Amino acid sequence: MTDVKREQLLSALKTINHPKLNKNIVDLGIVQGLVVKDGAVGFALNIDPSEVDMMEKLRGSCDRLLMQVDGVTKVTSVLTAERDSKDEPPKPGFGEKRAFGGHGTPPPAQGPAAIPGVKHVIAVASGKGGVGKSTTSINLALAFSRLGLKAGIFDLDIYGPSVPRLMGLPDARPESLGDGKITPLKNYDIVSMSIGYLMEKDAATIWRGPMVMGAIQQMLRDVKWDLFGPIDVLVLDLPPGTGDAQLTMVQNIRLDGAVIVSTPQDLALIDARKAITMFDKTKTKIFGIIENMSYFICPHCGERSDIFSHGGACETAKEKHMDFLGSIPLDMDIRSTSDDGKPIVISQPESPHTKAYIEIADKILEKLH
Image (tube, rainbow, N blue to C red; front, side, top):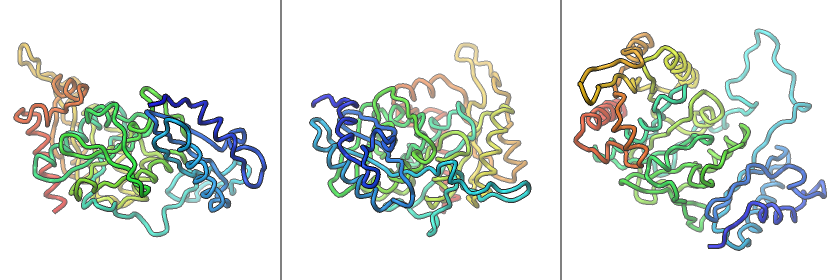
C-alpha cells in the first residue's frame, strides 16, 4: 500500500474553492482535524450553518477527490459549525437560565433515537479520568457476552481512545461496505468502534467541541452495528467529564441507563457526583455505582490495603438513593491483561475478578428486564 502523506491530501484539497468566496478551502481554514491512518482519511469542514446544503455538496466533492489519491482506501468527513463570537446572541443576564446543551447547540428536534440493530444501550461514565472506566467498560461488555448476549462497545473518548488496545486491535481499521456504512471491528465475539481505529498511532486529536460532536454523530450514523447480527447490549465508554461528547450522546442516543464508575477516594467521588447530576438533568436512568480499585491484596503476604480508602462509592450510592453494583479490586492482573489487549474476563474466565464483573453485568441485566 502506498504511504499517504497528510501534505498530499492538503494539496489536493487546495484545488477546491469555496463556492462563494472564490478561495481554496484549506487557506480559508475550513478544513480541520485532517488525519490519515493506513489509507483511511478523516477530516471536518467548519462551515456557516446557513450554508449547510451547499457545503454538503462540497463535502461530497472533497471525499471523491481524496479517494482518487493513490493509497487512500476510505474517506470519512463531517460538517461542523462554530458560531463566530461576533455573531453570538447576547448572553443571558444574571439569574436567567441557559439551555442545557453547550455551544448553543439545541437537542435534535426529534429527540434521542435508537441505534439501528441495537436493542439496549448502556453508558459507562466516571466524571473523572484515571478511575478505570474503560477497563470496566470492556470487561462489562465481555461479561454480557459470557452471559449469552450479543454485545458491543462504542468508544466515545475522542481525545484518548482506549478501546482499540483493550480489544487487542491497535492496528485494525474498519472497512467500507460501499453503501455509506463502515464495518465495526470484532474480537472476542464482541464488536467495537472507536475514533482510534481511524487515526494514526500516537496522533493527537486537536479538535474543538463541534468537531467532536460531528465525529460522534457520524460514527453513530455510519457504523453498521448489526453486521454480525443484532446487538443485545451496546456499552458506551464515555470520556471523563460532562462536556460535548456526553451531551451529544444523551441528546442523540436513546439510552436505557447509565453506570457510574469511581474509586473510593473523595476527589473521584466529587466528579462522580457531577456525572450523576448530568444524567439526572437529562432524565437518564442510573443503574448504579461501581467502586473500582476498591482495595489491594498483597500477592506476597495476602494483607489487604485500602489504597484509595474504601466504601466511598457505596456511601455515595446510599446518599443518592441508587444501587451499589459492586467492587472491583486494584489488581495487577486486571492492569496487565488490559494492557496486553486480553481483558481479564476473556483471559482469566474463572478468576474471582471475572466473577465480580459478571455479577455486576447480571445486576444490570435485571434492571434492563
